Length: 238
Image (tube, rainbow, N blue to C red; front, side):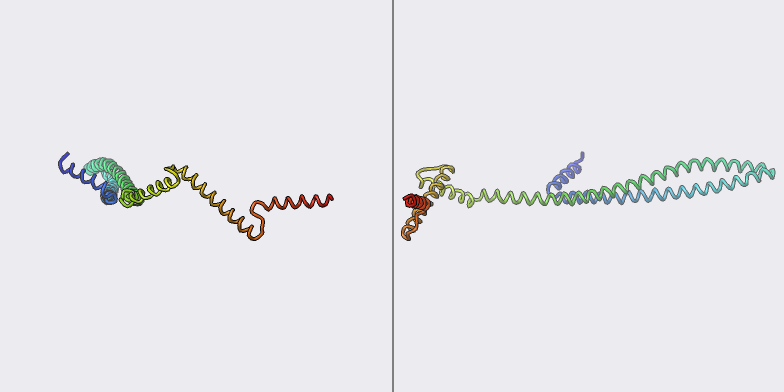
């Protein structure tokens, strides 16, 4: 491999990683150029096929004319002309056989060239669709990576680390305020106990307010109604 070939391969490999869209555009350009080349070949094959077909028609007309003139020469006793006609006939038959073979091959070449044009067009369409889908997926992946990098950058940011340190310090102080360092389960129990204490204090305040207004205390209304019902029963028995 030459120096320039190695350099070209290295440059293309670098391009693939830096700009995938440019790689697709390059491949699409190559397919379009291939379509142009295949169309040129297809056109040349058609021209050759038509030329051979016209030559074959001319030979066939010449042979038909010889086959008309030969019997006339024989009937007229013109042996010399008849011999020339026979040689002409044999030569035309040989040329017709050769030309027919060439024409058959030319027809096959036309069909092959046409198929090549159709295939390159299909490849171009497929490559164009693939480029659209691949570039869209690339954009989504790049966006996800950008978000991930932003999150990673925030977690590595001194401000973010300072915020985490402050949160941990607050949790430690909160644990110490409740009698020592507690884990998350211990802190949850402390909060539950504080909530229960607050509820009991609120209920005691409610009872004091009810007592001031002559209302039964919370939780005692059922007992008082039960005692009154028992006194009424004793009076009815007397």
